[in-house]
Image (tube, rainbow, N blue to C red; front, side, top):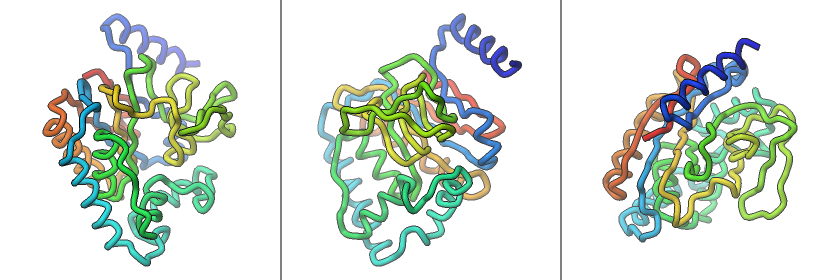
Length: 255
């Protein structure tokens, strides 16, 4: 009951200040993953409807370097990937059946399958993700004023898989990225939704960079630094950067 009272007070104070959107990691998540952290970069006012050749070249170079680095290797046994597989197991997720996004990405590249160019914002995210071997996401924040959260899924939640037309119901207790009852990402970093995807009209973006304190949090912060610099360089947009962990589980996304 105390948690909900505090949450109500926080929401009321935000409305009075004209603040409407936070990124929040639900307290219960840290019971399973006490060292979980998320680097945060927010971009606002980005023009994603134009081609940016420099970003395309950056992604191509990152793909080529990743292919050379991991060709012929078992990605699931690499040191950078093991913490995510371990975390999935702690969450009751079979990492062999549901791979963390970064493991799936490097597995594809190691087999010589490369990856497609989507649009400048997504391509930039993917390039930095490959450069730092970190799972990174992209979420359109222009669709809702509700908080985006990492939390446990509930019975009213719905997920529309990327490219699909039929919604799914996440498993009970599954860790998700969510906005209201709309699930943005299932099984933490496994699969992203059609809702919140980045397209040519997107201008307000949330980039989460998932990691672990004491394991790769310095890389998470370095990736956030570089992503913010590149967003300013190529998009000339306003940005905001932060770091969310057990000690600081909430961050405003207003830029």
